[in-house]
Length: 479
Ligand SMILES: C[S@@+](CC[C@H](N)C(=O)[O-])C[C@H]1O[C@@H](n2cnc3c(N)ncnc32)[C@H](O)[C@@H]1O
Image (tube, rainbow, N blue to C red; front, top):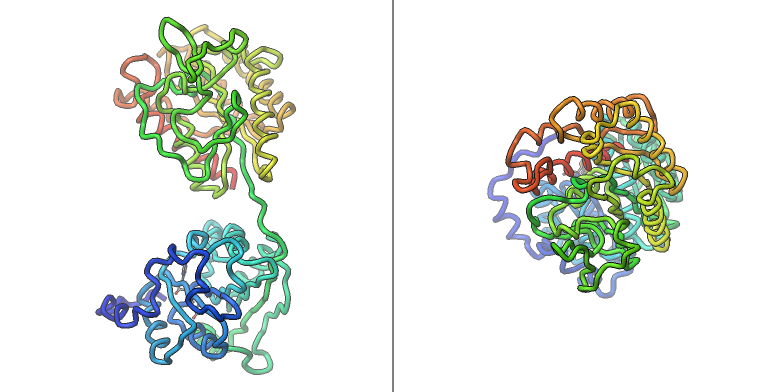
């Protein structure tokens, strides 16, 4: 039921401000300072009007309880109760529990209560349930090993779903009951619980013990193709780092935060040719095999792609950039030099990532075909060669899927269509492939999305739109 808006909310909140932690991030790692002698630090998520909160705090004055509630109109009622009872071991924070890792340090908590969370009954909303595995992984990080989650709900379907999620997250379950009050009331009831109990609805309860910390999963995405993938845009967008996204730099064998410009640290310095960022000339053997957009120094689709991917999939990502301007499909044939560089770089990145992470998905994202359109590659030839490339990527570095950003217009005649159709048919017919987006062709129609200086290439604005659409699509698929 939706809460009615409370009058004078702010003044009521202010009146019990000693219970209201307004800057919870500053307490990260030091919550126990609020009660230095506390036996345990606990959190209750979605405390509602705080009946369970205050009664539990009163019953166990040695422990410190932090109640989290996203709706201030409900939370204020709990704070008022705490004040009326003169409690010294309970505080409230108004936040979305999805942010819990921003406010609590790794292993800081002893126990976390989830009482009667919203069931989100439609399966498309499963990931909003506070017992969905992505939430459980957050709780597992802020709880210590051996710490506990106590969960109660009236909703039988949510309960069964949650038990599966607990098992999936290596949470050891104890005292599982599907009718807690069968033989009379047990423990402190929440506000919702009391209502359901009076209606005769059985209450489900379970305790979970944290037995392990979640693996630090990292998906690896290999970005391959030609100049539009390489980043031949007209300007550099703000070079902000993308949260939870990293890039593998092959020349230095380093994993660094992902930001524009993307690629190996080499530059095209006009008449002098390619140079390393250090100013040294690039060694001859490397010239034709080093990929990336840093040579242009401009905006690339990888950051916007990864941002949108992470928004969907909630994992960290390692981007591996292996695009090569003007390349045709023949140059990506297994055995050809560009392909062998792709394999070496992908494997080096995966090996490096494995040192600290569990590898999740490995995908190749492909934006290529413009040069094949120019050279008149037929649909069937392109299809056959791209299928062979995808198969080799699976075999040579464990790619799970070959994800295609359908190429846009380059020749503006039938030759473009041959490549577009080849890519579409592969994605329709061949399970190795996924079509991420077809909007590249739409962007071609708007001058603001095209690089004003280099025909057939997208502008920084255009490439970010393309990256966002494609990354969101792959993130959704990967979930
Ligand atoms: C069904 S009520 C249960 C309230 C209380 N635990 C009880 O049992 O009486 C669920 C509560 O969780 C809060 N809530 C839902 N999603 C939340 C989130 N992401 N972060 C914090 N609180 C949330 C809601 O605002 C609501 O007050």
